[in-house]
Length: 160
Image (cartoon, rainbow, N blue to C red; front, side):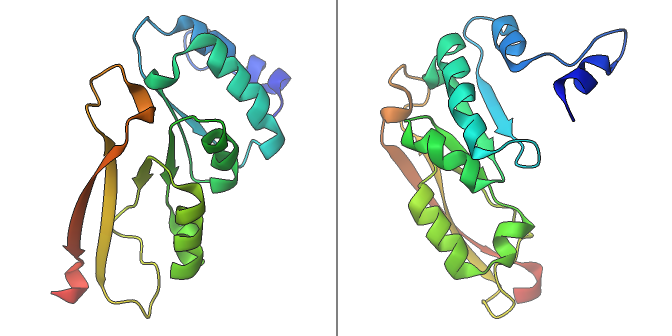
């Protein structure tokens, strides 16, 4: 969908879809933002202008960039942004090795791994995962603070 097409959309009451810059300017001071990048609409080349807009309008410690598309997250991670990888069926369908490889290369601060995702039919029906929560997340130290790890072990209903 083009910007011109977006501008013609009425999202209710005569309101239109704002540009990212308009959204960022409208955020109240001290707000936190989880900006989800849609891989269906964006390319890796779009990341640099988005990063420049974000740096102009919001403190990085109040921002997370997330996406199901890991290719869109790699540039942001390299530039020091906090990233959250939203793991879906696509990533799981590529198998455990591909999933682990992406996870180790990307090293996201946050990961959303739905329980219902099965990484492999051959894998045991027991998932072990780690979730990262920045230490002292209420402090002003921001994402540079090393994450505190929490480990959990889950059993799926099929393994009971």
